[in-house]
Amino acid sequence: MFKKVLVCNRGEIALRILRTCRDLGIKTVQVYSKADADSRPVELADEAIMIGPAAAGRSYLNIPAIIQSCLMTGADAVHPGYGFLSQDTYFAEICRDSGITFIGPSPEVMEMMGDKSSARKLMADAGLPVPGGTETPLSGYDEARQRAEEVGYPIILKASAGGGGRGMQVVWERAALADALEQVRNTAQAVFKDNRVYLEKFIRSARHVEIQVLGDQHGNAVYLGERDCSIQRRQQKLIEESPSTYIDDDLRRRMGEAAVAGAKAIGYESAGTMEFLVDPDKQFYFMEMNTRIQVEHPVTETTTGLDLIALMIRVAAGEPLPIRQEDIRPQGHAIECRINAEDPARDWAGASGTLIRFIPPGGPRVRVDTHGYSGYTVPPYYDSLLAKVIVHGKDREEAMDVMLRALHEFSCEGITTTIPFHQQLLAHPVFRSGDYHLDFLEKYMSSDGTLLPTPKAED
Amino acid sequence: MGDKDHHEMPALDMMQQVMKEAKDLARALEGTATSRIKISAGALAIEIEREGAPSSGGAVGGLVLGTAETGGNAAPQGHLPILAPLVGVFYTAASPGAKPFVQVGDRVERGQVVGIVEAMKVMNEVTSDYRGVVSEILVENGEAVQYEQRLILIDTSGAA
Image: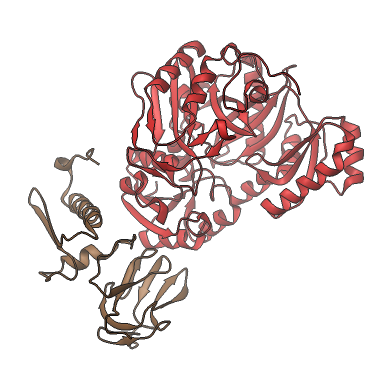
């Protein structure tokens, strides 16, 4: 087991990792930027090193400073959290070359799955269903037009190197294809420095259902149930829950087994997530794999009673998985609301400022992961996620009511957050019915940030 | 902040904890007229005096080392700190046994090399942002430093 883990992330996920390290008796080093000097992770870690200015490029993405910090403190492993360097193949390689364990999959696996078109092909070869589309990046407009005719409109153009919901565009008809292709290519080049684009059949009226998998270095892999993350704005998740109301036990098992088959096919040896779309005919399609811990992992921790960060650390240290598939029996219903420092009424614009009064909820069946505290200033440089409220109920109905109680308790003054949005959502008849798709917000949200009881009129 | 159990802590952990609290406190007092802090917990007592105040022992060094410059102004008037440009190991000389780049009392020009920070086997020169006289070297040769840690104080009061 590791003696000292360096956390190269910030905010709630840094705290989350520090907590498990303490549980496991592992010493911690927190690296941080100048903007985070007054943050809880810096306060709670055994050691803290300021590695650069506020700009992430010179701090949380500053590979030499992070490796140097490991060497100076004797940290024998790094946990990258999510975002920042968590899916950076080059960083994982340098860690390995420096004798430091990167707590995550191998750089080779990260590379294979980081490229969306390569991941799509690998998973199709492993027997996972993928939407009709191209096996290799498009050579140009002529090929795009021909392929789009073959699979039929609507199609979706995706950047091979894309991620985080960027570099994707739905094309409804041939007339719009040329412009869309140009746009996605330009975005891909600008954001990911890689203009390769492929296309897929666009799955309409789908749900986003993802499977948490966990593998070790000894060829074992299990699935830990699903998370339904279908309430999204611009491909960004806002609320996640498990189990999904959209799939039955048979489909759940088939998706889980497909995810494990995919993980085993690439020798996956950490926590990871296989993202699928499920259409109204209950067909599921592989979308992509996230080769890291995800924001919404507490949903799975709540239903399974497992500590995913601890398991990730254990398998990274070479231990075999301590659980078998038959030991995993998710209980009840869990929901997570992402409390972002954002204003839904201003097109989800990020907010920064000082939390004048910050009192997170508590009580039975409520967990809150947050780095916020009264007096804390949310810096404008990073992700807007301020807190995650996770609740557990015996069924979905009870979980939704516990969440409403928790959100009612949450005092967060001084900054605009998504708390009122979540309160509306959890009271919304369509959300409560469980009968909705990924286009829920497009249909029900007005521009002033309120949710309407019935769908907006089509323009 | 108040969630730590000081009673169960082994001596070393407790010492480190007290040091950390002391640093936080000292940082909070930067810019105020307070120049001396005494903290005691059980058998442990730590006394800190700020630079510029009459020194009464080694505790001053203990405070300054490892504390990054966060916009406060703990240095005496006219004494400005040269900050570490990156995380690494600070060296006062170009090689072991070589003459230090600067020593207390030396006159330095703006842009003059005053030390080295080694990171990932790359030597990064530290240059003075100021013209003046070296009044204090705050970090030992070979010591690990963090980003913007105060390395050397330059007395600029006599500089034209």
